[in-house]
Image (cartoon, rainbow, N blue to C red):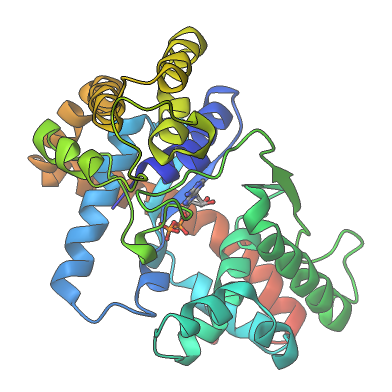
Length: 318
Ligand code: ADP
């Protein structure tokens, strides 16, 4: 489920790119989810919830192509073709595989191949730019490498490359949002504050943010506090300076900071939460949006695949 790390690290930038008039493709990565999920009903539910979440936060299906990954099965076909030019050693070095298996996820081939499917997800839409944070730069490098290898192996007749080699569009001002335990917020670490919670649930989650045991009356260092790090995302610079002064003066407890953080989260997402509830209550609308997005995405993907199949010597005998 979407958490505030996703919001500040990704969704806010998606909205800006959309507002700037770029032709954007945003999708729900349900094929990738299958690398660890074994519950079809849950996957369907998560897909719907994510669709509602992105739409509630402002992804506009009239401006961006918004769809479910699996509605473009061509992407798995392209993944296979890229697999055939991908050295095993390249995958063995990726951060995500090492990280996920070290946390106990079953090392299946889907998990190993995750970055190749990501590469297919990018190049199938002839993407020029891939908006990512610094932490995801390696994935774009892998994509560029694989596109280059494919073009070198098969592209005898195209000047520009049968596969467009994308550039990373690094979102520099993007903060890494800490989770309630101070590590990077991530659903894999069970340390998230989700966006679409009730105010009561938000309060409970905020109360679970880990702090040290400095007594209420003592001065505290805001720079060492997880609550303050999260307040930075929501409070104005004036309010932040005021809160920092209160930390340093003493007599201001972590509980006060948590209560203010909770209020700010609830205010920031109040409107989106209302929209989210409405969208979830209208599954037909969600289906229509995803169906239409899938149709647009498939059109672009199929055109790319015709070039790619042609270059590789694979014809569709229909
Ligand atoms: P998670 O780590 O919870 O599985 P994802 O890998 O699905 O999150 O990330 C989706 C997007 O959100 C990516 O673009 C990623 O860079 C961004 N993102 C995720 N967690 C954070 C975070 N803690 N801070 C900043 N950006 C984040």
